[in-house]
Length: 495
Image (cartoon, rainbow, N blue to C red; front, side, top):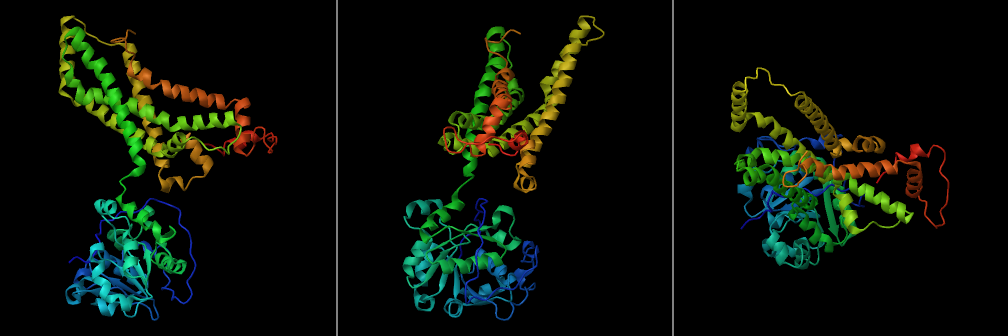
């Protein structure tokens, strides 16, 4: 019978955490130096019980753990390193004692739940009933449920694991926490988005107590409300990149459309009208022509919702009306769309470097040399084509560098170091088959957006838009006139 929740849980999305106070009657863990919590607390020799962690300080809060799997071992290591006294309850303590820090006491489950007031339940849901024999010893204690259901279990059960545990132990206070933290994160220390620990319980005092423990362990607690929210908390590790679904489908749809368009112009048209077989262009050449088109359009779609939002604010004369849901979702996905644009541009650069390596390109060079010899031309130089290619390459490198800067500044660690003004400054022939060139189509949306941005810079629009974003309303009670230096003020507020 397995005793442990799996250690492959994922971290929750980055959400601002809330502070918490000290619960009366609880001992405070040992004070840690800044930055010390980021260091790994587990050593490579821990499995052999050679590298033991420091003994807990006198009077440290005693915490119990039911379970001896991977997550329980990582949790015990983090708790011991954070200054807590840990007692681990196992069905076979002799076999598992060597896997835990030597300062942690490993004993039978009945003895492990006797003295601690806080018990971490690190067993699977189907094994909760095996703990019913400990109901008398667990009465009045805080049970912290760290389990996660599988996707099938989450759909099958109407109640969360934490609610099910609370129904089995009505005399205990159940708190849902630490289910979004992986065993590796507990060992190696929190990093960026892995710091958030959602907590929910029906008892505020229990949540406050667990929040203190979360702080002492180097994480940030996030109050999710009552235990009813446990089902939502347990669903967090089941989400696979939820914010990327719509942008990814959008990028894929654009790629398919432009690929079909380029296929029609560059492959199908020569085959139908001239009988030339150019299907060899599909793997590299057509893909390379498609990628920059997708990158252009995606980058334009990053700034288009801001233009639409500004237009709505000018039309309504106020900023206090909600945007339509589709526009609101569009604004929230701008970061993902921009990063996908950078991804397509980077792929285009790699594909471009590979173009001279193709066998077909070598054959074209040989055929061109033979043709030049047959026509007795000793010097072949087309000034227009030379300049065009030089300019293309130069502008392409500059565009990729600019897009790289936009992508880097969208990273949280970089964006947090910039103020809003700095962040805004960085972020701010005959047709084949009667079809215009692909790049002509891709430039339509960027040109429209640039034109709209230019219109919004005109004083008649910019002053009105700035007043709206500062609280002015058309036909409303708020009326004021902007000062003479309002042009500087508008640069600090953007949609």
